[in-house]
Image (cartoon, rainbow, N blue to C red; front, side, top):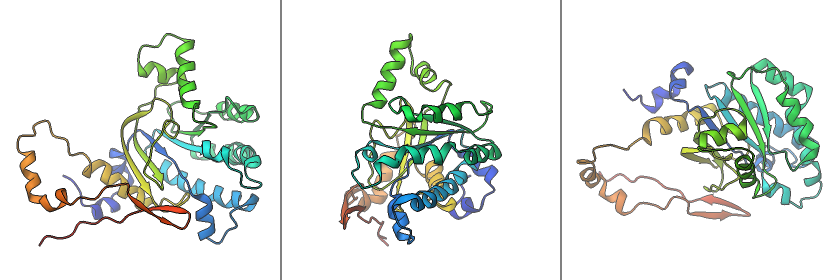
Amino acid sequence: MKPTLAEFLQQPIDLVNEIVPETVVYSCAGSRRQAALAGVPATGNAFAQWSHEQMLKTISMLMSYRIRHLFVPLLLPNQFKEQTPNYREKLEGWVEWGIASQTMLDFYRTHQWRVRLLGTEQLPSLHATAERLDQTDQASEQQTLWWYIVPDQEQAWQTIFRAIQQRTITSRAEAIQAIYGEAIAPAELFISFGKPMLNAHVIPPLLVGELQCYWTQKPGYNLSEEEFRQILYDFAFLRKTWQADKTERPQAALDFRHHWERGPILGLGQQLGPFWYPQSTSIESEL
């Protein structure tokens, strides 16, 4: 029986884990906005340290659930195009420090996570970082945290084409094995920030499954456990409306005529200073 949201928020984590998808993509953005709201200077090493702490807190919360593969982008193409002073030249150094220092290797070991870094082919300075994570003593059955970097828009396609050229591949499963070195179930849950949009580089190559997408409007690594459970509740109990026999289904729309005939367009927004923000939507009572 479907629990209420209030009941679901209070359920033991073992029960919640029964509906957690195997593969999840969490794409954070707006960390400098989060820092500004917290009164932290959004530049320099102080910002990097503070943002790193927020990142680890949120990733640890997500990994406390039974996610088998968690994919988290570190750098995407727009970050490599930035001309903000003292930003672009520090990106790769922040990655090295932020995910592969001895402190971080100890952190992964304590949490019993297997960790990988993808997307360093065009970034020679990070080859050793990726190799260091590959060589950590981690068993394949452990939860895996996949950091990934996308320097430009073409990298996802290049990764796919390279895998196809190097061997005979006849299925997506074989291509996934070639790219990631193991079988990975396509992602079913995507959590991001800001504008509701998808592109070829934000989702790791070939991992789009029946992907349910959610965009928070709280910037940065700022996802609480309650908010994650709200997403899981919607994912598991509200979005799964498909029926094999649709004989009676169309008639049910008449009970909610007002909402279908006056429904909002999801994705329309407004500008708040230099930022985009979604228009509000609500269901008005017809009683």
